Structure formats: C-alpha cells, structure tokens
Image (cartoon, rainbow, N blue to C red; front, top):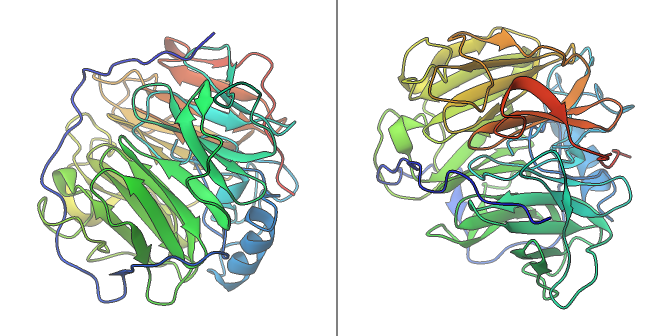
Length: 407
C-alpha cells in the first residue's frame, strides 16, 4: 500500500518571507561535516534513533551537556521518536529530551507522518497501515536513524546511521545521498528539507539559504514548516528563516526577507520549537510554552494573535510542542498530551478552544504533527495518531509499528 496525499488543495498561507537579519545568525557558504546532534531540546517531530552512527547519540550527549540546566534525562530510559517531534514521558525535568531520539517526523506542514522502526527501516503512513520505504530499483531502506515526510505527496528524506541523508519518493528513495555524511537530524517542509550537519544547518529545495550558521553556537534541533525552518542551538537561541506567515517569526512584523532571524523577546532559553503553518510555539526553561503568530482557529488556545512572543499556552511542565495547519499540541512531562484548536481542524481531534487533554494518551514520549494530524509515540514504542489518520478525536494505533529506541 502506498501512502496517499491528502488535502493538497487546502491553503498553505503565504505572506512574504520574514525580514531582518540577526547579528548572531548568519548565512554561510559552507557547512561543517560533523557535530552537535540533538541536545537538550525536547523533540516533537523527526524520527530518529539515538544511535545515528556518530551522529545522534554522541553529539546529543555532548550538546545537551552544554545546554540549559533544565535539560536533562527525562526520556533517557524510554525511547522516543519524533512532524514537529519531542521525547520524554514522565520525566521530572521539562526540556530534557533529545530531538534526535524522535522516531517520528521532525517538522510541520507535511501531510503524511513517517517513523524509523525498531529494526532500522523507514515507514510512512496515511492511515493506520504503514508502508515501508524502498530505494529506487528495489530494496528496503535499512540502517535508518530518522525519517521525515516532505511535501503533500509521497516524498521523504531518510537519515541513516552513517550520517548520510537520502531523499525521494516513498518507493524510490535515491541511492545517491543528498548529504553524504555528518548529518544528525533532518526535517522536511513543503518543497524543501534541512539537516543539521556539524555546527550549521544545510538546506536544499525551496527558496531558502543553502547553509545557515549560528555565530559559533551548535544547532541541536531543526524543524521545518511549509515555507521555512527553525532551529534551536545548544545555547538556547531560537532562529527561523523562510516565510513569516502571520508574524510567526516573532519579530513584530509579518513581512520581510528569508534570512534567519530570532524572536524579538523570549522568556528565556529555548529548548524546543514547534512551528505550525502561520503560528509558532516553543518550549522554554521550566517547561513554559510561549506562542506567537495567528490564532484565528484557536491554535494559540484562543488567547489572541501576537506578532512577538507573549501568548503563554502552558506555564510549566511541558516537554515539547508541535503545530499543524490549524492546531497545536503539547507534550507534558506526565506523558499526557494536550491540544488546542477550533472547528476548522481535525488535526487536534478536538474543538475545545483552550488546551484540552487527548483521551487515552498518558505515556507519550514524543509527538509529531502535520497539516491535519497529530501522532504520539508511547513509552512502549508504539504509535497512536488522531485527526486525519484516525478520522476523529480518538487515537488509533498504527498497525504493527514499533519505533526505534534512543540509546
């Protein structure tokens, strides 16, 4: 069974790209080849295993040591997978999870969720039945650390344990790598994807800078959305580049160029970022979730639109946050998932306005969100999804799927 595209014709939002540069964030013409994988930011999307060769696990531990004191080991004993992605059910320390330990998509805006399996394969699913990704010419993709969906069609990029990234259609993943080595995380948007490679983020496709660096800081999470991407560094700095729909970059305007910028005001060190279509949320120290951008469908909990950070969705205790087209979901340290949306989104499976718990989810360690769905990776490595995957508010299990553990 092939994964099918859904809702391609629905609006993608599209203000002019965001403007203004940030002195600490510069575009670079060359990217590094090894480095800081997934640090202390809680990962809500982006499938990955902890053992990305030298990638995710060793880099993750190095960068998390430098990251915020609130980052720790909440999910170290339980595996996590992560379209926007996070990890860590039941951890006592919010923001303690590694984005590279996420077995689900890492980013928002794609219709089809994907995951890295426990036996190192890559699957994607538009229903409760997963499809295994294969190379062009035949043969299953193996040795997979992370996989992310891309576009509204059957496209994906796969991060191997070797640190190489391969992209293509689900049944035709190219044997020629897009990134030859050194990648530690990959995230897909509409017509583009980006990977952490050393101390830079390397992007391809779309109208984005090819390489983005962060003034000497190492990126620990990259999360792409429809027409842009965001990154969190080991110093807790959040930067975004690409389109600034509805003021989602938090710089006080909804227009500008495509260069990387940082929100004008933030309440502390960022631990994880979860972009939606035209809204943005991030987890900061202490597990506080701040959001900005558009709230017309109560993506921000019905608290009102904001052109710079200022809408507090959760005061404390959050590990990660993910955004879809019209909804937002938060992973709490208790393993519970809470979502907010209005009547225009089936992705949250709710029409509650303010954040409300998702029934039946109590041991989540990672989240993934796309246009009209949300998925949770549970502590037993299974995956449950709601919205367009289950066709309603009740989560449904993805048949036979067990995601990769973190090392």
